[in-house]
Structures are given as C-alpha cells and as structure tokens.
Amino acid sequence: MELSVLKYTGEDTKRKIKLNDSIFNIEPKDHSIYLDVKQIMANKRQGTHKSKEKGEITGSTRKLRKQKGTGAARVGSIKSPIFRGGGRIFGPQPRDYGFKLNKKLKILARKSALTYKAKDGKISVLEDFKFDKPKTKEYSSMLKKLSFENSKTLLILGANDKNIFLSSRNLQNSNVTTVDFLNTYDILNAYKVIFSESALKVLEKKLVS
Image (tube, rainbow, N blue to C red; front, side):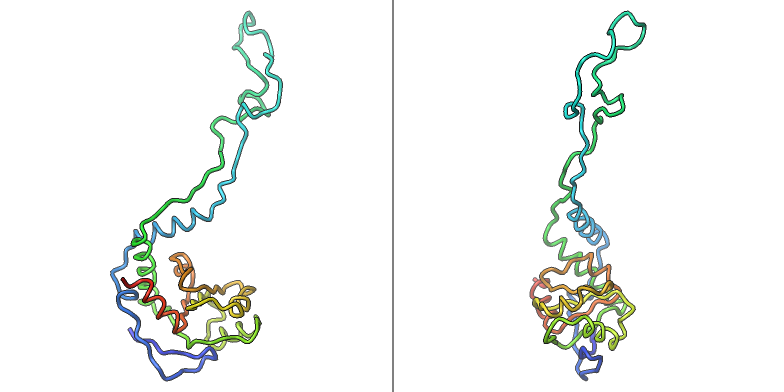
C-alpha cells in the first residue's frame, strides 16, 4: 500500500511512501488484540481497594449476652461481620491486576491493529517537522489544515519531541507518542493514526524480525 506524504501544513509533498506489508497487511489476529488490550487496561488498575476484616476492627471482644440458657443463638463480639460496623467477610484486599504476555504476541497485536487501520484508510504520513516552541494553537492549526480537527488522532513520532508533545497536551482528542511507547490500545482508540516519516523507519526495525 502506498500513501502520499503530506507536510504538516496540509500540502502534498508530491512524494509517496510504501507501507511495509509485514506490518500493515498481515492476517489480523483478533484474540491477540484482545489479550494485549486486556493487559494494558489491567496494568492501569490501581488495585488499592481495601476493607477491614474482623481482626482489623477496633472494638470489645466481650460476649454481648449469655451464651447459654437464652434460647437464642450464641453471639460473639461486636466486631462480628453480622453486626453493623463489624468486619467484612472476604472483602477486597490490595492486589496487582497485571499479568504477563509473550513479546511476540504483543507485536502481533500491534501489527493486527495497524492492519485494520490501513485497510480502513485511517493512516496518514507526514513529513518530519518541528515546532520552535510549545504552542497549542499551532498544533490545532495543523490538525485543521489536515482536516483532522474533529477526529480523535494519534501522532506517532520516531523520537521524543518535547515541543510537539506539549503543544498537543491540552487538546482533548489528540494524542502524541513515540514508536517505543506505541501500544495496541492507543492505535484502536484513535480514529486517525498519523505517522511521521522517521517513525515508519523506526517501526520497521522494531516490529519486523
């Protein structure tokens, strides 16, 4: 698949670039995508939920009434889970929800997500560009000239650029990342995926074995 290379001003450079078929034209594996996204979302969970069990409640341990001769069931301390303010039985405890996945599976998931985007025509390529200083207005103007201002976009750079990142930070539907931090969830969550030319070269080195 060939795509036109655009300038960040929206003009056509009259050049075309060929997307690597081993990344953008594979047989997608939906289950790999599912597992990778599941891991990403699980790793974001704080897992700090906590409730007190009987042994952690402050209170008297004396029996609330006579244990025998009343005709009723025995009653323990005020900390018992059957009383209001008592401990909770099998309540939530702090835990880590993260789990591990095979590296090759994660690569396959990213390739599958990129293949879907390529087939849907949701990938664009920009000539490498830089901003002299962080300016949200300039980044917003770029999206407008590219006709992406009303779309959720993901801009992928070959290397970290602080000015571009800071310029996009205050825009709700704009996300900027580098190839090193690119993940399946971000690809699928964006309506339009925008690559810089240098990012495509770095991506090939990273994903093509």
